[in-house]
Amino acid sequence: MTTDDAAFHPSTDQVDEGMASVRQSPRDAGPLELIVIRPDVDQRLSLPLVEVDAQRGLAGDSWESRGSSRTPDGSADPGDQVTVMNIRFARLIAATEDRVPLAGDQLYVDLDLSVGNLPTGTLLEFDAVTLRVTDVPHTGCAKFRARFGMPALRMANGPEGRDLRLRGINTTVVTGGMLRQGETVRVTRPGV
Image (tube, rainbow, N blue to C red):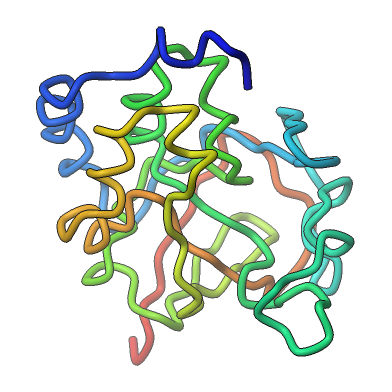
């Protein structure tokens, strides 16, 4: 994050206008557009491929060592092992492609992440990796506001944004393996 973040913040009108494209995200399958690991606080590294492990999450990411305030012992919460964000919304609020990773998520997909489309328990299946959508909420915070502005935070945390899960979703790894940028993610909903 830089002190110049405010220069990139979209206006309320820009966010509202860009939402038409976000609402058109594919429902059943879409490409994995970006893979990002977070080696340390406020560090982001975009990768063309990454190893995904059922216990450790994404190789090189700080998820496991960072821990969680939601667990009794402060250990990492398996319910937020891998975060996934809609690439259309990320691009809308980031203003430039190099700012997309600032959202802090690990996988950016062109897919409808809404509650109605991906209920808890939905499987996101890639070539070798499978993730399961959890019920752990993922919401915008002070860092999100500083990086993308109040209109982006209001949209992400407002009623429509929560329903569309614009801030992203939390998942846990079911099957590990190698994950490559450009792979297609396919949706398998519970009970199907």
